[in-house]
Length: 164
Image (tube, rainbow, N blue to C red; front, side, top):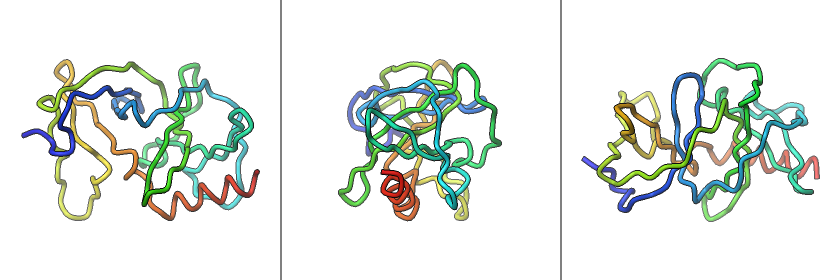
């Protein structure tokens, strides 16, 4: 059973955290940066790593491991920041997503994507667009617009304003 939101072949950028592979629609990705110095902003949630200067613009950076309740990891040569555009309630926000490594861009057809599993009522999987099948493995396709709550994006906006 294909996912109703995915009606055409799309390109996805894949990245790793721990042993899991995640994917984002390439249309949401602005650019990929090597790890750079992140300025910590006091009194923000742990997963909000801080802000970076991206060609004169302040961009909040989120540690995706911490956001997904994974253990923190030391930075490696592969650690990078995926700069994404998120749309919530008709507002666009630019965020940096700190991940272990970026893998590749590839296409998936709608038939290759299964719905996200429903794991009881206590676990929110609304941010998972679907499970893509690739080489006998699953890739978790994220709906990046639903990964963050309005409150979290308000914190990110406040971080941007405070350091501008």
